Image (cartoon, rainbow, N blue to C red):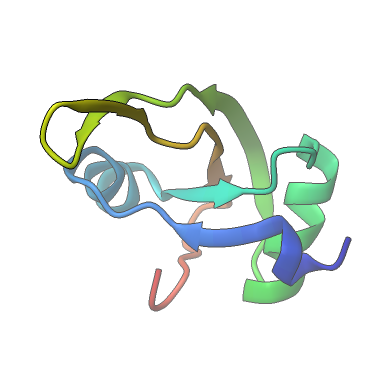
Length: 93
C-alpha cells in the first residue's frame, strides 16, 4: 500500500483538536489492514515529521435511523493517534 491509501483523512473533533494543540498528537482515519509500522512510515513520508508513538483502535459502526424508521449501521473504521517529536507539527491537519 502507498501512503495515500494508508492515511485516509484527518479526524476533526473537539478531542482531536485538544490533543493536537496541547500534546502534538494528530488523529487520522487509516486503512483497516494497516499496522503501526506502515502508519508511521506513511505519516513520516507525507508530512516530513518524526513520529515518536502511535496508538490504534478499531471504531465500531453505530446504529442509525435511515429514511425514517428503518434501522441502519454506519461503517466501522480504524483510528490512529500519532505522537510527534517535540517542536514538530503538521500544517493543515
